[in-house]
Length: 507
Image (cartoon, rainbow, N blue to C red; front, side, top):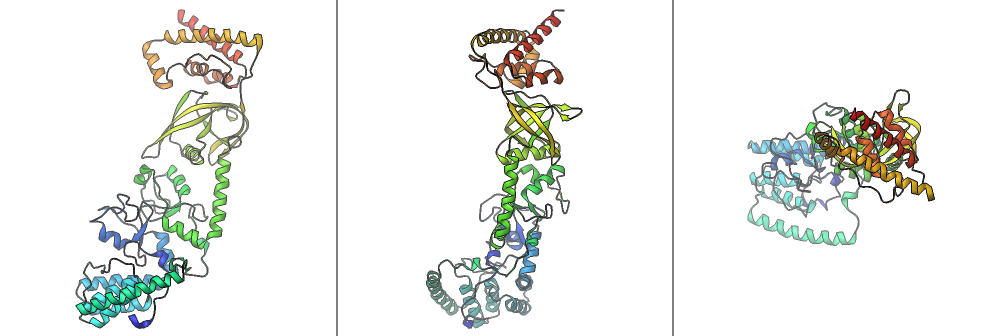
């Protein structure tokens, strides 16, 4: 193909263009940042630059890192553009021959490649270099002109073998002149056809949605991420697998480093392909995902329940998460934005107790092996209406409970009782040995101050819950306090426990 063969046609594969060489993606590698480039481009430039050229993310192609081809993308390109893939393979074979000074053999490879992919500017640019080396200046000129016409905005007009394109001075002058004319014509053409981008051209009439299905959920990729070993999954599917085993679900390669980073960037090109060629399927997939999130966000029905220890309103509750089901549960609480889940003690018959406390996540610290430490604090009390399960962890339909308020003489008597029990609790805590006091303070913090109005909070005074949390009571003795709707009954119960403990100590 020469420069006189007519204007370049829209390239069907422009959406699959490598942002380094501007050519067709060959052996595509998706970096941790989510951007995809040719494997050869990354290998060639990694010594000089380890950052992604698009987002400047560090460590994208660091020296020593094994670059793995994105399996899904590679298969799609081979299926959709077999000629272009073959041409790219011939291009690389030609480059090796050129380095070995086998110029005629290299030229033959490029001639075959151009016949398969007549709109690839890299083929003409590199073949121009070969012809220039062979002193075939006219052929070199034609190829150089064609490369400029196909990719007029390409700044790097050099071959992949890192040798400068060489043509005789008069040939270069003609190329630059023609380049200027073509550039102006392209600007006029762009103005006349505003909005028609070659990158928007659909390369095939029908795309099989199953080509873009996640191998784990068997549904269309949603938020696709690619592992360092080159396999692609839905983000949520991958996270759930890593909850159980820090290895790739397909090839079983270790992903401990990926797990430790806790950073999964979506593969940009995969998202673009799905949005462009499967818009209706993506809309339906997004609808399903949003419905799932809405269901998970409901704090009345199917509320996640952590069956563990007793938790109280306003009292901190640090948790060590290591079981896969609870890893999933905590992550969902964070993803939905509620950052809340229920805490109940176990029950030998029902699985967990009929009363519990909603905990709110304040912070999560993740570890390389998948474990995490959750800093949570008690919010509201609830009664379980229905016990159930979801994806391996317990859930429940719940209703929230609050203290019943009193007025008049009952309120006046409540104030007296409140102040009296508070003073009793304060004295009990101060009577403890210093070592024990220090442990309590480091875990639960200081005892809250006395409330001016003990009925101001629907759950009653914070100091009551603090005292119940630090008292050495068994779970079966603690649970009734959580269920009480009468502050008077709760205060009397605390007073009886404190009195009993004082008498025991005095003996």
